[in-house]
Image (cartoon, rainbow, N blue to C red; front, side):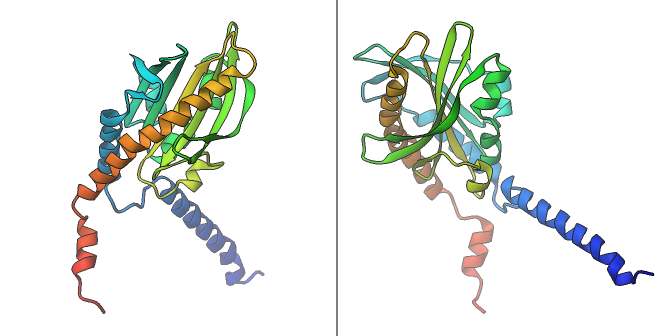
Length: 243
């Protein structure tokens, strides 16, 4: 006959596993965050929509686009930007789409999932692409192409976090603990464009947009956060007697 202890061991191990998985999931989804994530997200979204640049370098806003409600819902977008920009020298156009969301929501809505759902096939698998910025920094992005009959789109996407632009392999884990991220897409219709011109165009666009974004949006978000009163928890901790 097995001892009582040996019978309880698998049960205890199972309970520990459930607790561990629940704890990790809670961190990744901000469930255990003591702050008000909804308020922080709302402020970040408002800053994005108010301050996103209309022009930068040789690019100017050409058209405001309506966001697809279903797509925005799937992305967990609290705020968003959807625009077409035109290059004043070449006449080339690039679409910019940005969502402000939690890392959990933003990381789950990637082009390799949404474009096939819209009838596109993956023509060039996603891969990392470094983009040199005009301010001397380097941004990390993903890029890939999506095609259907008569049309091919090149898409770049990257996550803006604390003034950096990154392409994390497992975004939900690497961005865990952040209240809000801005996920930015640059989309080029490369149908009929040859000799890698679409890639060059996308890099040119991002190299000027991302520094302008940080100057207008990131700095405004930092100022907004600094102006917020300390949370009751932080105040209590700061005013409690030591020991």
